[in-house]
Amino acid sequence: MTRVSRAICALCLLLLPALAFAKEVWLATIEPGELYWQRFGHNALIVRDGDQDISYNFGYFDFAQEDFLLRFMRGRMLYQAIALDADVDIDGYLQEGRRVWLQRLALSPAQVDALETHLKWHVAPENRDYRYDYYTSNCSTKIRDAIDLALAGALKSVNAHRSHGETYRRFTRAYAAPVPWLYLGTDLLLGQPVDKPLSLWEEMFIPGELKRRVREMSIDGAPLVAEEIVLPAGANPTDVWPEVRDQRPTFAAIGLMLAALIVLAARPARQAANAGPHASIYNRPRLLGLLQFSLALPMAIAGTVLALLWLATDHSSAWRNENLFLFSPIWWLALPGFIALSAGGKLTDKLQRLTRFAATLALISVALGAFVKVFRSFDQSNIEWLLLIWPVVLALTWSTRRGD
Image 1 (cartoon, helix red, strand yellow):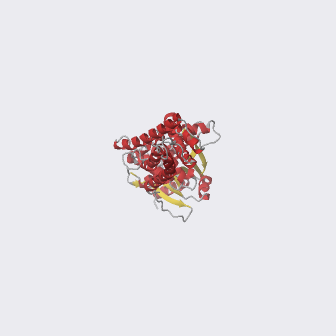
Image 2 (cartoon, helix red, strand yellow):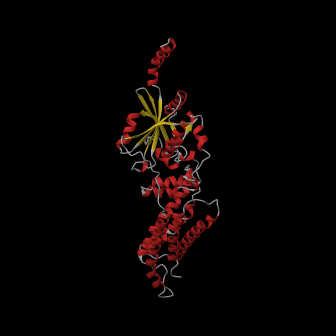
Image 3 (cartoon, rainbow, N blue to C red):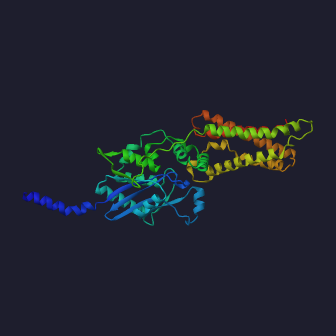
């Protein structure tokens, strides 16, 4: 062995400890859980530095935070970035029975340092709080942006101008589908902004989509993901994108069924009203009044909530909601009449006219909601709710005029 060779070998031996403890960055992606707040999955970045593994997690909030409930209602919720022991963090998800994908990112030492500096800044007490948004500023978008910073913008440049044609609403429906009330509630409250086609960059608000994009990406011809494992050991590594079946037949069937109940309840009252020229058109069974009230009240509440979300909060994903055509707050005007009828009372002429007027306006609103679909600017994906509501409102309006 020459002197030069011996020198090289000696240098390598000196560098081995440093190489053995070189910092690594792992993207951890946690699959969706059973609880409603776990339905969209989660992710974190783990920095390994020798025996120290730190998990940087942007998914925490504090119920004890000042004005927490008010902030939540107004769309001004604050989340926190925190640093945790990675083993403890990951073990918590495994104990819940959720698989965890770990992807080691092929980053240079300089890139790792830049990423770690960025993450440490975010978890500092004075910086850890951030304004949360369901789609544009959440636990996954924060991780996405951190990786993009380390890559000097390469992640965004590759994905910002590509699209699968998916929307925020489609992702929300797919991931919320296993929890019916979550599916119905979110779909009803989301407005036009969530129906625009997304770029692949925007799709990464879902942790699973960030994992896929990172897996597919190459830097200077080399894969960005140098290694990938799934925990627990032996778990099925297959990751299937969730899908939701077409709900239009179900919504239409429910709407027709409710309309049929109204018609059946109103028919005997119509026959009684036709018995004589002076019979009151509101001489209906209590069952009909109770049914009218039970359907009109949820529509009035829903319409009020939709209007408040648009006009009085910062929930931008709920703005310009076309479901306001279908769930009209005007139903509040009809409720006094329906309450009196369900109690077996009689209405004054003024209250009769008010009830009819409110029901007629609500029907016109539904018709307008269907008509505006011919214009491209009204492109909200709410056909399911239209199929549910129009027969109900038509039957309710008819039932208030059945003595004519």
